[in-house]
Amino acid sequence: MKPSRPGVLKVGDRIQFDGQAQTVVGLSGTLVRLAARNGRPSVVQLAHLLASEGFEVLGGAAARKPPLSASALAGLRAEAADDALRWERHVVEVLTGTDPEAPPGSPPRSGYDPARYSLTQREEAKAAELAAAGQKITARTVKRKRQRYESQGLAGLVDRRADRMTQASGRTDERILEALQQAVSEQSAHSTKSVSFYLWRTREILTSQYGGDTVPMPARATFYRLFERVTAGQHTTGSARTRQSLANRPDRPFRQLTAGRPGEIVEIDSTPLDVMVMLDEGLPGRVELTGMVDLATRTITAAVLRPTTKSVDASLLLARTVTPEPMRPGWTEALSMARSVLPHTRLLEVDQRLQHAAALPVILPETIVCDHGKAFISQNFRSSCRMLGITVQPAHPRTPTDKPHIERTLGSVASLFAQFVSGYLGRSVEYRGRRADKEPLWPLLELQGLLDEWIVASWQNRTRPRQAARSPRTRSTPHSSRPPGTSQSHCRPMTTLNCCPRPGGQSTPTASSSITASTTATNCPRSAGSAQE
Image (tube, rainbow, N blue to C red; front, top):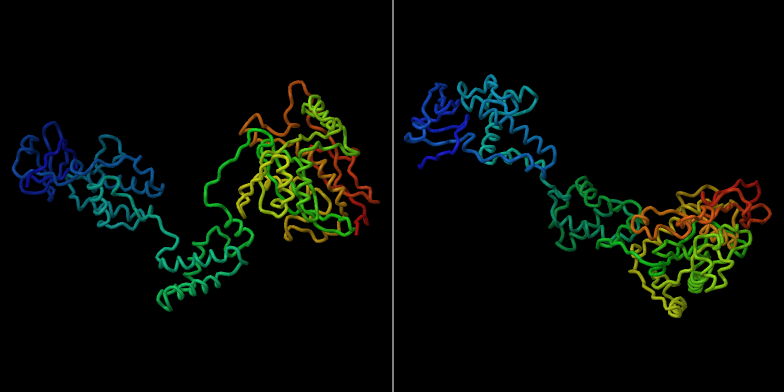
């Protein structure tokens, strides 16, 4: 065997010299102090040692690979990295007799001096020390750690079990996992069922595909644990509405759609309004809110309330978008376009109707994004858009993420307007009060007027920090951006809205109410017996 010649000989190296294995326990100039297995020390010249017959480095600091630095543990969990570094201290002390964190020149601790104790004795001492500290460590474990450290460095001390990634299915047969996933996907659009149904359905799928008793089913408790891991976050046994919404999410990554000018992209949609109103027949009922929002300015260009949205209502909404919003009787003058920062004087030369218009910009859409509702894909609505040169872009079926801005805007109407209106029902039955339908109700036309006033007075003055961060030029809607020298009263019109019908049927909102638009609309005290049956 050709002896290995280390470039550097260090304390703790185990060498083959004079026919036996010995350990380097000291270095002084060209003198090397050795200790045999029986503990007998000896001193030899380094040149004589290296040139002797049969000299070989068996292990130790010179033979092992360079230890990895702590940065090599960055990909591990903190617990696994700390455990590896702790074991390195113990292994180095077993090899050299000195704790690596001890001050320089410190003598070996009792039981670890290589000149007096063999490597096996030092391993036993370390095992006894760790056992006394409450760790179940044997000398065999210390030896195994030492051998891995000598051959692999710090990486050999990493407990890979702590960093191992476990699958959700564990050791379950892959065929069972595939059958369970198939059963879950089949029921994503159906009513909510319990875990026992999926246990039965999984068994049926396995029987139809592989035959009876070919794939053994796990125990009931094991299947329940597997079901919980596989369906985590999917609401499989929870809310059907949430489960269907999650199932409709597209697999592709989301991207942000931006518009560089008003009217470039406009979104339209309808949703039930969470308010009970008095219909034209004198009966209480629910209505639908149909709105249109401009993507560049977030302006609600128009919104209408109807018992059921039809194609003529969608066309009416489009007509209101491209025409000035007139001032209504009882509206404060602060809501007029003349009192806003819009270029009213120049626009008046183009359209004289703007003389008595409210502070709502007139936006001609270039592209309208809509869903596949009958009112929006009807011939009437498409003909109206074609006449105005507007492109209609239908969204993907059951994909509300194709038009998220109108979805969020209609949700904001519920939180900022509807909940302050008398007759508010909440977004679902579980959020509804006991006698919500017995509250005084607004007539449909008067609630429409109240909504129009709220859009001009409140919505058009909301600041939008996220939109401002994307583009300072579209900081908000026109009322929020003031040119230099313009007073605040000219840009943030102060009006008052009363969202409670008055006794005697006089419920038209006027400027003499007591609540400003900057705080949105609120309920007012109602006298007993004012409910309209």
